[in-house]
Image (tube, rainbow, N blue to C red; front, side, top):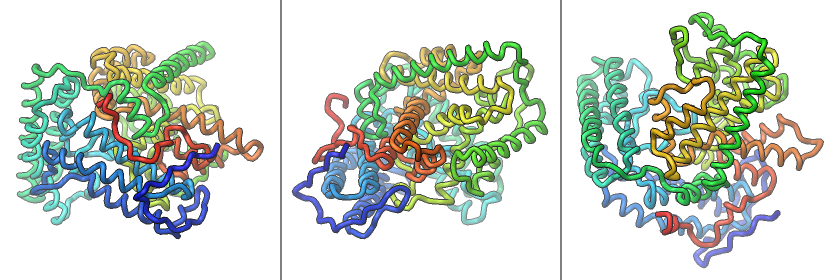
Length: 561
């Protein structure tokens, strides 16, 4: 199937001939048109970032209205590029920029995090995410303390003092920006977010105490402002009664035009319910087959934890190489070993964090999900040749690709033999994890669709997670808060997995006897951490209908605003 060309606009820029290229080679750069896209992308990223006044980002109603007014001109510049004859890889980059612009458009028209979501104003992030960028809507000016070496240098301490000093005035601005918010679930969850930020600030202040008097003072002021902001949210919560989800039609538009996921809200409900049923049924069959085997014992000591987690890395790296799963690089081992974590004691019968319940029974079952860290290392060690794919896409556009891969390879690698030398009961853990993800994804969909309120979502996710391993309501509320703040994230684990499975099947059918698992995964990774519909276009030449965007700039439909 040939992709329908994007027709040239009257204002189209002249494009020089470009050289064809194929995955995984670098996009041809001999013509000026693709260079125009790269230039536009760099300028666009500057525009998307709000103006800073005395170190504080300006998200006031006036500033956001001005940004929204200017956005259409940026879209017109993008659509003015005549991409009809560009190689597919370069057209893919065009669509990535389009998706980002649609993301900002959707934020102005529907999501409006600066005006609806108190947690948008959280600034401190003490730990690295396992995906290419922060999960959820993140304010510009965020502070990743994990990127600063300790003890802090004099220059770093001065920089951090100035950045932390921006938190109190930012939160004063936020009170005005959020004045008309009625999103009750987002509002209530914001209390936890700012209690958490206050605790993180206190912890960081203790770690760097005495480095500089300016930094000590800035951290103390930021902590006090965060506590006061949490109190303000709590005090005003009783007056909030509106929905927090974006609605079914808006969810569908966002998926198909921002995250480039080819499913509607209704289709995702069907997919999540199907995977929920499949995981539970598969678990019960595994349990019956294993009924005479002893239960998996949990890791009991720090020494056993370190030994088994490191042995798990050893086995995993051998598995990838020996079973010809993908090309293995020397830096992969260190990337996995660095995130093994440490032992957390628990009383007999006490339930830890859900994924700890899996890891402490068999680290190999969860090990494929840690492919996240291989992906992040690849972005550092072997950056994509495209400057547009070399950096994480905004608005978590990467989520279904990133989380879908990490979830998908759990089951795929089980089928490829990763757990064959373990107790047969280790297979049960894979189905338990899939059930948990499908359950929480369904809850998130229902929140956005107006079918659930938060406590119904919490109850559903807990009830459909096997073995009672999700008893912590606060943990579930935290997950559902993210999924409310970032439409599509909750489903991305499962919907992304399904897209990759579909692509694997399609590539295998196309390549026939030439198909190999290693060839598929190597080509898949080489395309970068981008939506799978774009990878599919590169690998098969098939252009998904959601990429047919017409010859004039898209806009969020009035009906879903």
